[in-house]
Length: 256
Image: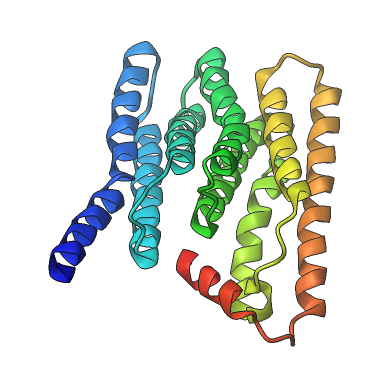
């Protein structure tokens, strides 16, 4: 009986680990559709597909590491968001060399931002909150901010890229200073800041407001992100010598 149960569990785990690959399939279909509607450069195709493949592979690795047997509705919502972010990345990459449809960019960005409020709600309502899901959501947020920042920077200046690079600079710094990898207590404020940054960059990208307002909201977003990351760094520095709680250490390892 146990061998049969283990066999079924193993097959279920394999199916769950294949779930992220649907993002690649859906994303490729989306890229093809965009190509029919508007210009999509080869560079855009490459960036979009690269993001979809890498993000899906890392998610599948995390699911395998945690031996997850249920993908869950909240992760499904985040996976849809991630697919949309891949399409946004393709359009933004195309904008470096070709004129793009701004309405198309906004049409892809708005649902990607809106669904950010949905996945957390679904996770709480379905009692499927997990460290991996939170990490997946955070990385999708970070990449969307980076991509939108790259687009807005073409108009407002390359300083805007700071908003998107903060997360990755923080990760790189953690390689040199291990105490920066210590998990911090969850803060709803950090989620609010990330959401505001995405909305601010989307507003700046839309061209619907005056340039001075684009600069103001982008600077506010940058200030909030610096405060949020700074607060985490201060907490980690203060607690750098504390022993890691076993549960936290295990969850951290599971999502790396």
